[in-house]
Image (cartoon, rainbow, N blue to C red; front, top):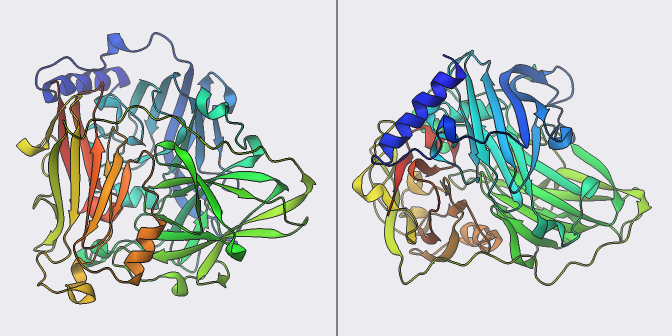
Length: 513
């Protein structure tokens, strides 16, 4: 099927899904020219994830066809994880080619997209086919990412290596004088398991294994074990991204040094925050500043990770990558170089947010997260047909709405409190909503939290704009959002990828008011 034929087919479908309104992006409406044009290919390959034999993976390769050739590169230390840098306001065209032995499609996580460009699994293309994305970057400066989103194969394809980081810049961010260039350091954190020949091990077919989520005994950073990087002795900007399928991390610096948090999923915070540790659930991103100026040349500053499974099992002790220090594993180390540079003072205020939607005008919708008869559900439903949407999953364009995610750990498994309330139900659920950045309003624990839940909660960064929110067992989290510009069918789901593939994902339909 040609690219143009497929493009016309799917945008026509978008008009039907939007209730008969006009399609948001027809071929004739596409930008006449692109500021950045890329070729992106998903294909089998190999990479040196561990010392010794290369690992067979699936990877994204690409090239810049038009625009700044520096727009696409590989993450430091990886050689196979792409880093795409764009500016707000740029028009982008990406020709995506599938060279895998199965269908796939790309979701641009965190970006504000017309429905046909968002990567819904209904648009997955077969081996040898091409899908052309055309959109304008209208998202705030921040750290985003892209990954496959085919139905029931997302977990496998991400685990196999298909992950890319996407950084957006804008004038507001650049006016602050934040660390840039070699001092702007993205760190993609992923856990993996390997056989004796350095080949990836996947989950088997047992449904219960998938419900527990994938857990690796090696924690990789930028696609390799034992990440180290030499940097000048000054302030550095770390873009921390949890690209794991299911594991949640509590991150801190060696020596008890504090981190200055400056950004989350949707870009810069309004004001910096000092934290001793941060919690990073699957698909969440946090930007922090760390100061290496007090270090002597050759000294190291390490990032420590304590790892938790969706079922709140501590995985750290069983891992084999990195030294065990202060209850965490050393997963990355910055080595202070000979060069010392002056640090730019951090302003008191980082960002001016767009006006918040009106709470008084918002309607509330509750989404109950539970396990029923061996299925992970939202409001008792699993993912159905590609275009299936319930009446309560229709939202009005421009209307403020509150979604309350209720992780009621007592449902379906008997009642009780604390750890006695049905272990199969005590699940972390990082909830992701496509095509929007929302605000966390409040959290309420309906059961007495234990020390682990309290610690995970203290590390969560709720200030700022978010597209993923971690909902702990026994917790209800309210988030405020407002959908703008684009109508059509989008997804919301748990970002534990095995949960998503088991059906903990639903469509929602944005309709014209």
